[in-house]
Length: 77
Image (cartoon, rainbow, N blue to C red; front, side):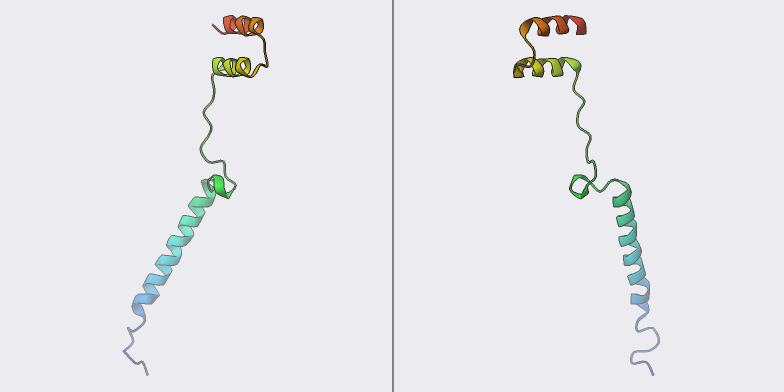
């Protein structure tokens, strides 16, 4: 015999599967999007630097001398 009638557990029988299904959908979307940088995913892509910016950085670090810098800068223009 049921304590509160046959519909006592009816709301939970509908709500729990909806919550579980929502959780599964969120997990699948999270996995297919890459999971973000903290979960081993790639996260946002870094900005691609222009050749001129790379050349300027190399010169600033001392990897190339002034003559090479001027020559490469002229070639890029």
